Figure (cartoon, rainbow, N blue to C red):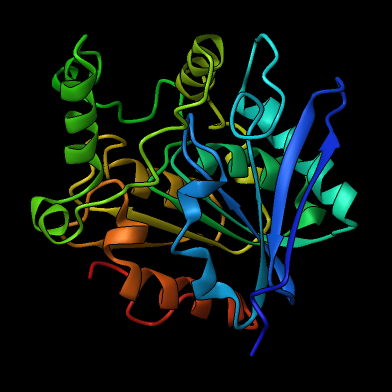
Length: 278
């Protein structure tokens, strides 16, 4: 079993000189974990250790979050992808498994499409191809998130991330509600980066075996985006988690972790036979 007490917290610089903080835990084949919009590496707290029997996990603080630099914009998912390549170069990692959720899944699409030699396996969770062909969240969701009252906006986000039953059993703290230390310009930059993402034309160029995951009750990034991705990426497979909302990787951890681990371990990169709805 891998010793997951091995930890490295370090930093490098992006091509434009921005400081990029990153973290590596455990040992073994590297698995990159990419967080959602306006979040730092703590998004993966309580989940990353599920992979330490076979992998070391690599996370980074996006520019604008955590211990990374917080320059002015513009920000984009393509820029974030370039930042991750800089982190991998600093670590001396030539090829890694990549698991991106939410905006991290958007970033992962660019990494896999533009740097196919760097990605061994790809997992895309609760994410979207972006652009005019994507299924956008509805107006009611946008209004709920834009409320002026911070407490009401936070509650709306919690309801989009987790089912009521899960929230009742897990009173927090929660690690997926955004980095509270982000300056306003960086928060706006992340929103624009996520909203302007459009990798539709790049998706057919992904060569890594790909697993697409989604909660079937996700309204933040509607679940209809999962079959779009699975159909657009060659040889991609899809699995929907019944009753789960956006943060399926936490709420359905007991199912999602083993499913991802099995996909990463399979010599041909295929998910478990029961992959589908479940």
